[in-house]
Length: 406
Image 1 (cartoon, rainbow, N blue to C red):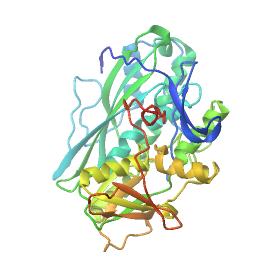
Image 2: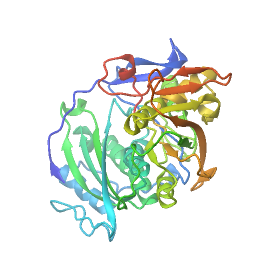
Image 3: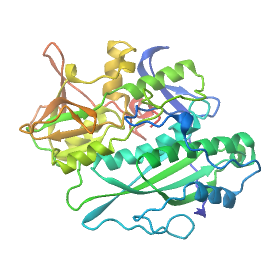
Image 4: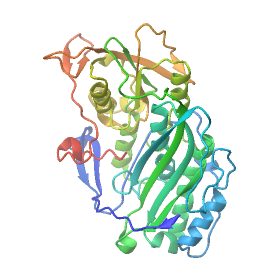
């Protein structure tokens, strides 16, 4: 790990599911205390946060060298795929024969993806890794190694409270890494700008593998294919809305279950099953919202989609918001990290894969003049265009400003 200077001038902006001041529709809010927030979906094989591995306790101030040494001690793991990990200028990876290498990277930014005064540090670490693992799941990949670049304000290593936060962050990350047997093979550390007022910035790189020529893509769907989603939708956005409404930090959690915002579960086993059983023609994970990610699939595969509103598997937490808000959360809320995939209509799709429910929500059609890219069929049979309403950075519109804390 080398020292580098990295800085992003971020606003601490949040969006909550609300209509005016009520739960309902996404609106922009400004966080004035300088802390950020993020939330996500439930795990199928969750380790209790109370039982997370404890990092080595440090009672004195740490510098960069001390932090790296602590990480190296606590993340020491033997792996045939990583013959050389933390401590040298580069890691050495050894992918299995007959495979292709998959690489993905994701930011976790304070004020954009989480709030220090709301999210438990274990959740921030969990979510940081889960986002990259979900990308691998979408392509049917198997994790090989993770690389973490982390920028911290100086107070995070100089004070007992700061060091405790860092230790708990790594505990959350490590618990999920061990669940999926992902070694932390290296990364980078830096002091974030603006002194003790600086923000926490993390960038996770995941390296995985897939059998040569078999990785799932967004571009493989064809007209006539059926559309499926795993799990349930809208839970992450609903839990985040509830957190923001309470505006109280969750100090500890007895379990990661039923916390779709705090502890999303990447669907790695499902993705590998789709590849192994040759079920899917195209796939991606639902990180930006069903409406937006389906838009990406349709554009990549040059098709249109029709989805049935009544078929959407809406999370129980979202249903607590009321019918209209629950539908908005399922369509546009994002951060569910479920898989959205297509398959030939002739395929007899199981009702579950790797223990995760699978629901058919619609089908793909040929593009033609006048046909919307996505059409939603209401329970009464009426058709209406469904526009992309999920998260989009840099859009400059209400849609783009929605702080979905991804």
